[in-house]
Amino acid sequence: MAVARPRPGRPEIVAGTVLLSAGGTGGHLFPAEALAHVLVARGWTIHLATDHRVEAYGQSFPAAETHIIRSATPSVKSPLVMLSAAWSLYGGYRQAKGVIRRIRPDVAVGFGGYPTVPPMLAAAHLGVPTIVHDANAVLGRANRLLAPRVTALATSFASVGHADGLKTRVVQTGNPVRQAVIEASRVPYDPPSPGSTLKLVVFGGSQGARYFSDVMPPALEALGADKRAWLSIVQQCRPEDLERVQSAYARLGVVAELAPFFRDLPARIAASQLVLCRSGASTVSELSVIGRPGIMVPLPHAIDQDQSVNASVLAKAGGGWIVPQAELTADRLAGDIAAFLDAPERLVEAARAARSVGRPDAVERLADLVEEIAGRKRGKSPS
Image (cartoon, rainbow, N blue to C red; front, side, top):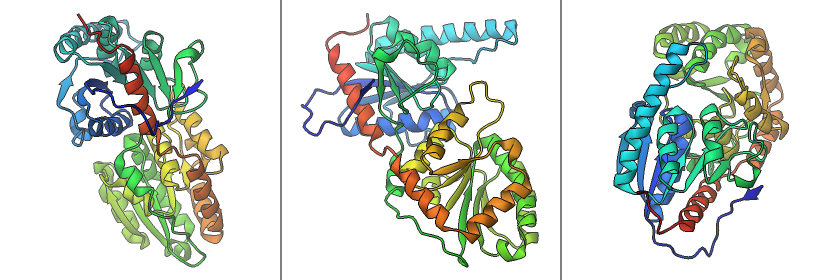
């Protein structure tokens, strides 16, 4: 497996246009956004192909144009849904071909999710060099479809599931993190001590936020008033859960700040001493780059269990703990928090271990790969 490394003395090249493609969730868009900022700083023009969800996560994306491409997610459970999805993807493919013929990119880079399938297939068929980046330790389904057809497969981890037979095109770059995460990584860890406040940050996307909203109040009640007094909590809650969680915390006398979404989440993580979270690839990457210990609760029932595999990388390094959702009862969580309050030195050691596996230079590595791939076929353009 090749490893892309920043080249301090890299030769000057004439920058052109890069088409980035990503599904409309934060896990796909945030790495693409990080790469976009670096490439723009290097002189490249960025176009983004995605879906309508970009409105929630893509406000800071430095794209010259954003192209909303038709797509859908196939389902093997329903032939009718599968047929409808195939028709939508084909429509998106034809739409993407028109965009590519107009903007004439030097290279196309996809970050996963089915919205990447039409533009990446169109780019490959039109002779544009292509790169797929997968943030997870298991290739996503859309990327599995695309990987055999692209020029290079960039990965976050040294070993990636479902990448058999693709080793000659695999390059480990790490998972790009946003500039806000790099800035947060400069904040030193504030070591907790017995008898002092423990700063806990709780987040987990839509499904994680609901589960944590259900389990945290009874866990804190089981913790007891003496230990609750030492907690300061920042927690993501779904809008419909905010009032009930606020009421529960007020009754328990818990100091907490609750919101449906924190735009400054990297800074919140940096200010924390312990994180309770899901284990999506972006979350694991951000914990390791910032260097904060996490109790990681992988999304259950995932077909490929990618979040469990992601979390295992951090857990094996000693930078966090995996607790399956079925085992995260209120009593279990209360016991874990109490143990950390009594022995906070465990958190200090885990924070150090988490930082040891972080890749803050991943975005530079990926940008170098993009320029290398673009340079190989410079002069050729889609017809």
